[in-house]
Image 1 (spheres, rainbow, N blue to C red):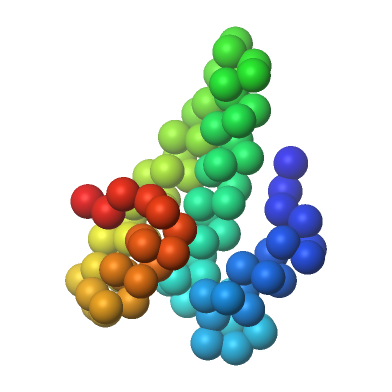
Image 2 (cartoon, helix red, strand yellow):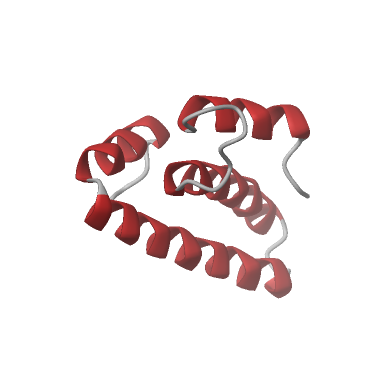
Length: 90
């Protein structure tokens, strides 16, 4: 299930430079984290849904790559995003 429009707008306004900034790494990481949390709940309730599990693993990998990039480019922003979203950095 995709993110609701209001939820996406609130994430973009919180992590983006402006309200239309959907492409920055911090916004993408925040959006992926929200989607990962939704899918994690779904996979926990539906143990045999391997298609969604594969999608979840792919999203986690994509977020990991974005976090690696952000850490390399802007360590301060990386730490802020990790602390704000309460996710483990690597």
